[in-house]
Image (cartoon, rainbow, N blue to C red):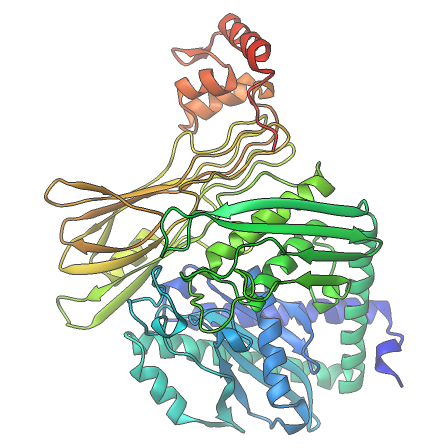
Length: 588
C-alpha cells in the first residue's frame, strides 16, 4: 500500500493526533522538571517534538516556537548523515553547529530514533538553551563577538550514545569547555530523559495501533495540515506586500541601523517570503543562519493561518522562502550568530507588517520586539567557583482589535517566562531592587499597547559581567490603524561612587559591588486612534499607573482632575486635536 495515499479513519486520526501531542507535552514537562539551569526550569527556554522517520515534524509541545522551527533542519541534518536504515536502537545524537543544521551555540539538539519491530518509526527531538557553552564571556552570548569561534564550543552532528553506550569522550569535552559543567550536564541529561520518555510512549502507541498504521496516520496528519493551510492562504488576497523594519545596530558598529526587508507574495494557495533587500551579514553576532530565519517565517505563517490547524511540517508545503546568501538572514561561516534571537524578533515584526496589509483587521500592533537574554557571570566569593545566571527581560505586547496589549509578557516567536527575582538572587550575588511596570511605555491607541517593565539589579559582592543585548533603543514598536508607537528601551548603570552611565543598545557591562544596572524595556504599539479610546479606560489606566495624567491629556485628549474625568475639558481637548492634526494617531 502507498502510505502517502492510504485512507485513515478520521476518528483514529484525531485520537492519535492528540495522543502524539500529549507525548510531546510530556516530553517538555520532563525536560523542564529535570533541568538544572534557571533559564530552562524557570524561563522555560527549551522545546520538545516528535518527528516521523522521514524527518517531518508531527507533534510539538506548547513551548518555544522558534525552537520548533529550528529543530526541523537539525533532524534533517542527522538523517542525511545517518539514514534511518543505519541507525540502531539506543542511538542518541547531539549537535549545535549553526552552519550545519543548528541555530546558535547555546541551543543544543538531542535527537533519538524510536524503533518498533526493528525499524525506525519515529524520531524524538529536544532543543534546550544551555546557560553556558564556553567562549569569551560567561553565558556564551557576547554582544561584541566578531566570529563564531568567540562564542563557544561548536558541536557538529555526532553520536552521544551509540546503541545504548554513552560516548564518554564527548561528555568529557563538554565538561572541560564550559564554566558551569554541573548545570550543563544536568540539562543535557534532562533532554536525554525527555527523548527516552518519548521512545517509551511512541512504542506503546505503536504496540496499540501497529507500526504501519501509525505511519499512515502520520502521513494523513501531514496531508491534513497541508490542505488546511493552503485553504487559508488561498483566502488571502493575491499580491505582493512589502515592509521594512530596523535593528538598532549589530553590537560592533554602534548607531548603524540594520535593515530587514521582506516581500510576502500570495498567489493562489502558495505563498513566498522573499528577504531580498535585507542588509548584508553584519560583523556582530546578530546574523541569522537559515534554520533561525526559517523558524521566524514558520511562526508567523502559523500565527496568521489559525491555531486549529495541526502543528506539523505539512503546514509548510505551500511555502517558498528566499534568503539571499551572504545576507543577515543567510550568513556565511564564520559569521557570529549568538544573538540571533533579537534578529528573529525583528524578522517577525517585519513579516507581521506585511500581513497587516494582507489581513488588516486581524494583525496586532508590534510588540516590544525583543527578549532580553542577559547573563550575569563571575566568581562566587564564597566558593571560588564560576556562577552564571540568566535574566529574560520582557516588555509589552502590541494592542489588538478590540483588546489592549498585555503588560510585561514574552510574546511572539520566543514565548519564554520571566525568571523570578528569587532565582537570580539564589544563584548569584545579584539583588533585584525593583521590578515594576513602566508607566506610559505602551503605545496610545483606541486599544492601548501593553506596558514594558523596569528592573534594577544590584551587585552585592565581588565583580561580575553582564551581556546587555537590548533592542528598540533607536526605533519604536509601531502602531496600526491609527495607533501610536510605543516607548523606546533604555538602560543605564549607577556606579557605587555616584556616577551614572547610559548604555548603548548592545554592550558588555562590568559591575563592581554596589553598582546598579537598570533596564526599562519598551511596551507594545497602539491599535486605532487614541482619541477614540473610552475616557473611562484612560482613567482606569491612570489609576493603575499605566498612563500618567499628562499623557492622558496630551496623547488621549482626556482631562483628569482629582481622580475624575473633566468631561468639558476632555471634549475641548479632543476637538482641538482633531481640528489641528486630524487625530493623534500615526498610521503605519
